[in-house]
Length: 313
Ligand code: SF4
Image 1 (cartoon, helix red, strand yellow):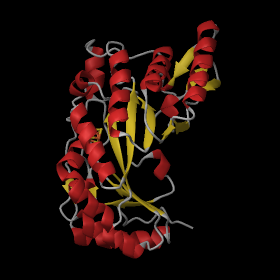
Image 2 (spheres, protein in one colour; image 1 turned 30 degrees about the horizontal axis):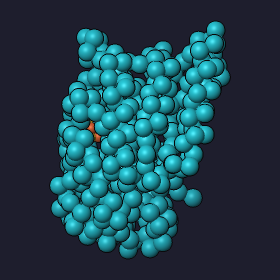
Image 3 (tube, rainbow, N blue to C red; image 1 turned 45 degrees about the vertical axis):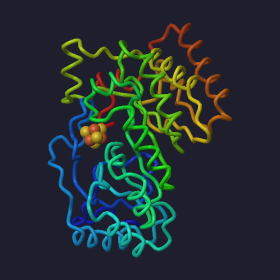
Image 4 (cartoon, rainbow, N blue to C red; image 1 turned 135 degrees about the vertical axis):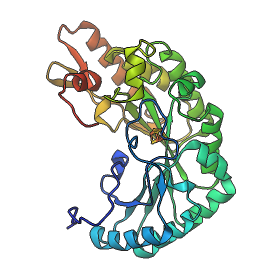
């Protein structure tokens, strides 16, 4: 049984949804970029790579807390910027000899800078997958959100990752373009995915968080959030333009849900592309048809968050 109450272990505050069962190793704290308008994750934290010695000690503790875990996630947001990341990953392999998957968040810009040769070394050390916040493939949306990476860097970072033999997981932020760039955001995001050909695409719907810089833009009218129906239309366009080779797509987050009254009527789309694309589009079309005729109130995570019915996202 895992002891999550171990007080002297540095648990990371965030991890991707599919790493819920993984051993969590905090190699660095915070985000070296920390400027994205929509993100509040590490705002109060200055980026701090930990010393290799400290991280090795944490890994030794993690082996006691998590036992012989099969999946490991390295936090916080961009630990691949660390000079000695290979040494850290090798120590993870030493303490978790049966690990089948070792993953990390990484910024596309970092992946581009590292390039496929260095990424091959990181893979050789034991890393298997990177989770990348693409958010959008639309240049103007990325600029507006202050993502700090261009669509070209997203593509190049993704390609370098794949060339190195690592699995690539892209996160798309539904609603990122707001009303103004809904279509461009959907189409250009699909195009970036088509060029980088990720192994995984995860959809996450934007909820403008209290205290975020995006909230200020929204209040001043520079960002206009989309309705639940518009968000679904955006997913539809994104899927229609998506032509990836073999990719698992999942909407593995509560923010993707749509409620009518008290009932969840949409839980997102899941499947393997391209085979399941038709079925996913059918689910979206049926949901859109239903939403067009319902008299009940249509709700999404944004509305529930605004009403104080959802607190943490
Ligand atoms: S790069 Fe990621 S962690 Fe850093 S500010 Fe942007 S969204 Fe947040």
